[in-house]
Length: 335
Image (cartoon, rainbow, N blue to C red; front, side):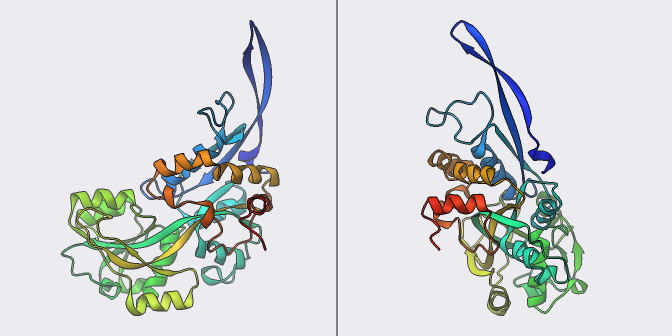
């Protein structure tokens, strides 16, 4: 059993008439590994943690209260990102976490970037959440107009342990480059954006649902561009890896920044096969409760795209039995 799933018993005093009755309620703690605080995983994780939680004393669902799981206290935990979250789930450090669909599939199968490693066969899916776009950001007057133009430049690939780091290396390879062709930095989020603005960096990669906070802030303070990831580079990636899709970051997403073609991957929510089936069933049901819809819609710009209709989109790792039971009962899974 995961450390954070160990239950505590809380004696809650409930006033009944003129007397007081002591009622013991079991608490369950559930962690969600997210990402850096200035990217998309962390704020979305906070919204979802709020939606699935229902601590003692909460008002009832439908009466302005929580529609989460009775006695559940979920928390969004900042992390280094996809790879870190997968490893934390496997080791039992965290109960669940967000990860890119490609990173999770490679971990589950022991293929791709996890070739030669023991397959993480205990990994299980709760839901597909939203589309993540690969941002390659540079100053507007940098002369960097393609991935190939990164040669000889100072480029942040994000931290090892992040999904961005994995994908940035694949993109470089598709363009005929490697880390030997650039000066590699390992800056995350706001740190990368600040270094770019101050001239300490020429470009940085970020994989995140748009708009992402670090780039919103950067675009308001400096003239920047989203460098296209298209043409032969995009074709190589989408042909070789089924998880990449051609997409676009629209004009106006970031202040004064033109739209750009790019590629995208799916952000998904994972747990372990060891997680309790009834708990994961209830968490999945709470996530897709109609009352949770309001929290998702107002909690983050990506929230409106997190829907039950896309909950199984691009899922390459088996569903957790609790989640699978919910989707079958909801008519979303018929096979």
